Every structure is written in C-alpha cells, then in structure tokens.
Length: 89
Image (cartoon, rainbow, N blue to C red; front, side, top):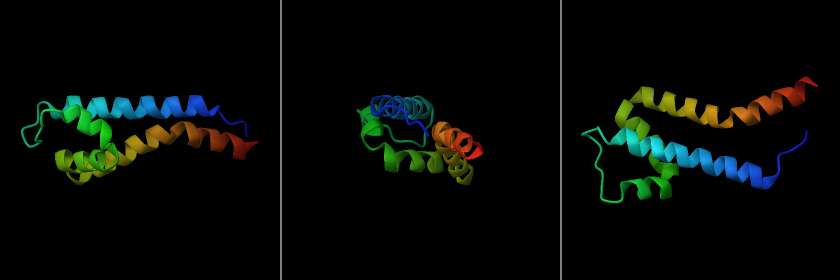
C-alpha cells in the first residue's frame, strides 16, 4: 500500500481539526447552556481532545456521542477506504 507523504497527512489532519474547532465555536454561540469565556475559540483549539466529546454530550445528550462517533468515522474515512482497497487487491 502506498502511503501519503507525511506532510500531506499532517496538513490534512490539522485542517480537519481546525474545521471541527471552528464548528464547535460557531455552534456554541446560540446555546445558553454553554459557558463561553473570553477566549473560547482558542480554548477549543487547544483542548479539543477532551472538550469535543464533552461538547457533543453536553449539547445533544446520548445522541451527541453517536454524532461524535460519526464525525470520527468521517475523519477516518480516507484511511478506511484505503484499507478496504488494499484488502480487496
């Protein structure tokens, strides 16, 4: 299996994480139950690993964890498709 260059893989991962953090920041603006400190966007970027699953749980309940699993699968879909193609050959 041919692997992508490391720079391409890291840039794709970085862009995906930035887009998720931007979405969390934009989605939380209209929600009254989410406390937004002064630098909320920066805090989401820095602490995205523990905060994004918590945010999904806090805003959507148990369905939020299912939505988070869907987002993770979407982010890993390039790897899953690549693996399926490799196994099929």
